[in-house]
Picture 1 (cartoon, rainbow, N blue to C red):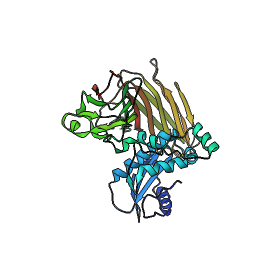
Picture 2: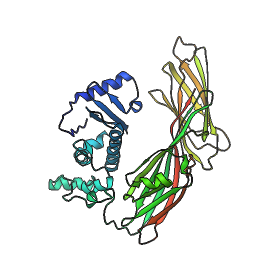
Picture 3: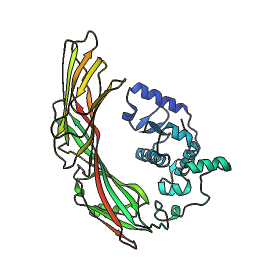
Picture 4: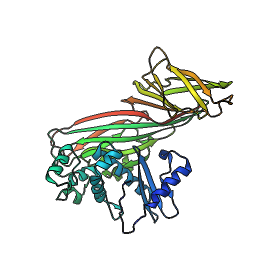
Length: 402
């Protein structure tokens, strides 16, 4: 556990014990725990990233989205600095983690959260810096001078940037969340998407990005660099970008009526055994190859053993009863099918608890929401830049009930 007290009032560590006990009492997976929890003495805010829980607490009421967004920024910055966000990397670089927290929040209020500015203030850890710190005895990664951007009107961008070649890439990254009932009916289908920009531009460029069909977007959220008035009046994104990769905006597209693939499970049980068959195929051709298809489900607790095989891909049953069927791509000559027998515990004739199937897939060069980029204009650049666009759609919380 890594702790950082940010205000004059000291919070006792016992709140972490209360949080752990609350998690056990709810009998929920930590990834499904509500982001805001009221304890007898504090309000708790939590996010779960890469096996690590980021927890913040306060004794007074405050905007919950501010706390959740700040925790998300902390997780993103640590991921950017440490590359692999896990317990070992945090232990190996706990000094840098504390230094980052000192700069990111001041007396309980968010301060500097932009990775580009933080990199100027605190040097990311490298093998060379670690060797030099051992040889010289100087372990400080903090710069002696304050970055000029902290006092400018665009604090997210480093001042006086110079690039040998000007390039900017825009990518639509979407995740499809869907729930399909045991009858094969589509209960819910929506897209959560992000517009990610990788900017490698000199000076102080001014960019304008427009979409062909912005009316389909809901619940939009913007990076601080986006000017709100042009979006409010004309649905145009006008901004001065940070340097490097960043999330320009996020959005949601609701009430989609189609999914790219279908998963049809069938279960029949009698005399202490259950026959399982799962069929996977393409429902609506997106025009590009559907790749990295995988079907996962947990065997019910009453299943003593399982024997499952497939005509395409590999089936793996782990010790915790999680079954993983890796399909990859759907072949053109046959529909992938997994089938087999589940042996129930003694005394049980039929299966009464049915599994939920979780589906994963990836489609390159397609945004299933239908969002289309119209054009990207750039100003204040000495030379015409290279512009690139692409899209990718993955499965998010894609569940098929049986």
